[in-house]
Image 1 (cartoon, rainbow over the protein chains, first blue to last red):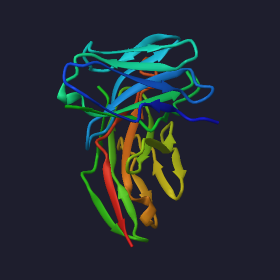
Image 2: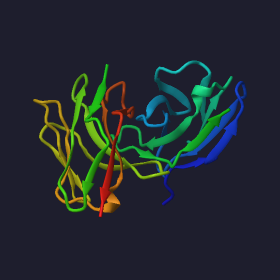
Image 3: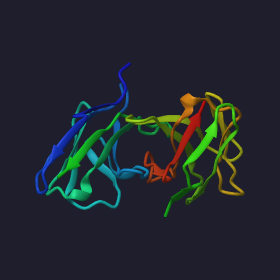
Image 4: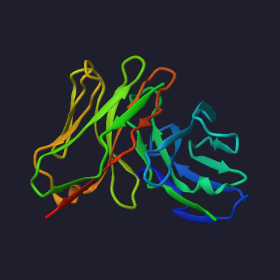
Length: 113
Length: 114
């Protein structure tokens, strides 16, 4: 049973560029959330997708956008990258309405230079 | 809004010592509470959870009890091992319109020496 998978694992981008991160949820899950974890901090909720719509959003600017596909996989897009966007981006999956058990992927390490 | 506060770390222990990591929370309603663990270079793994007051979550020798009266969910282990060295995060989910959204504490680094 495949868990939550994310790609790429590491990437380096230049300020002002755009980045797309990808996530496949755990088999049987239909809800995907994204978190940003800065070095030495706890993860911060970015947004959540269910039924291909953004259902909840944390305190992040519009530069952060996402998408969910019919197969439940998801993308996180960040435009106009800033140095402060350097972080570990975590994807989490769950089954909507089936309790609060949430599984995380290994994350994508983004470095902005 | 929801918030989670963990004891300031890091925590350094010798093998077989007793571990306590304090966690308190502020939330609306009746949240579910979680402990996640993050090993070096890895993502988050669910360690244990509790969904209502007085519930005790347990896994791999770790335990935490949901205390509504003190809004706490302290993590304990009777005898730690070197392999327990990791970062531990306390988290909550308020449910309702916030279903599936986790609010995390800042994390506590645990180092266990042989």
